[in-house]
Image 1 (cartoon, rainbow over the protein chains, first blue to last red):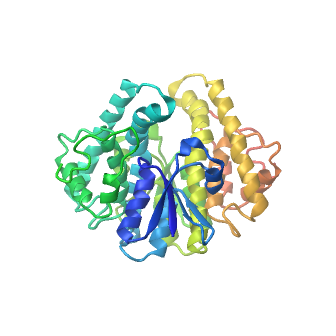
Image 2 (tube, each protein chain N blue to C red):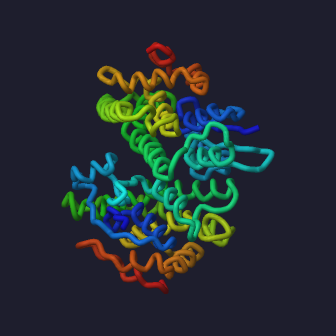
Image 3 (cartoon, each protein chain N blue to C red):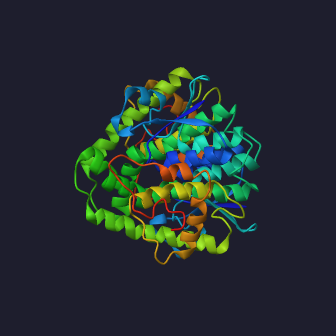
Length: 223
Length: 223
């Protein structure tokens, strides 16, 4: 059985879990704190990042969340998530990159640093200036999601795709950390609320990271 | 004909140019300084980054260098660059991600900021502490390339792949900016020297960014 090395608030692990959930692939969760820099983990992934997807029986260890998603897409036919013409697939991949890189750099990364790493690992107080800037930039990203939802049924096009999963993965971590203000973003909120009800998403919403509690609306399917 | 929006020292544009060169795809270079934040460019790519690959006749504009490379791989059969079993393809994509993200964050990004942006745009002096740290981290990355070259014919496996192109794109920008010390990295140096001789690489080595001159060994095929 697949083993997924991850921690509950890793957005890239969440994306892979959503893909595996949509495709009905069984896996075990293995808790890994990448900041512990365990030698055994660095042997699996020299980049020292979660997620790593391992099949110990086959001696296979896959790293980098986009490489893992492409692997699962190529090897499991059920519920394709990078779909359509080459141009449509490029559009899905463009959005995945935008959420993985820009949304993460602007919003999820700073929130994780200030509200998780500083509390659990560094034992420091969060920097309110950094938090304000992340929440300001979150609005720009939510406006872009509003725009996408205004022009298409799903973020990447006519059907659910990896773009929705990548976005929901980032957003769910930010929402857990109380970093999103949904007011004025009805389209994004409605898209996310529909997404929250998917069976692939339920296990993530039920999980908790030690010490850090999400706001009350976090796992509420009607919020 | 394709138009590639780029600037000479953009490592991600270089990766796409190497792919197009290997595959024999014709294109025009369109100079774009993403730091100018031109409205027309932001309309092509809301993320505001180079490269963008546009086909004006088809009304198609592709963004994100990995999405562009996957598109070219899917639509042009010649010289496949993401090859082999699903596991082999995942390994190629893992390495591409490592060079695009970690090598860039550790080395290319800081060098571009200190030696290009501060000179051309910000009119500031480079921070020697940042440069020293980037050059220290460059050694770790070159050691990893030494290790890869010790264990495989090419970085991603038995044949030339997108992993080599992604690595060469980053390395060539760092080398242009005088940020690489090759001493003690014979394997990496030999691999790069072979790569420099490829026809796809020659046009890049001949180009210059205004004001900033590369060291004398930069375009020397025997160095």
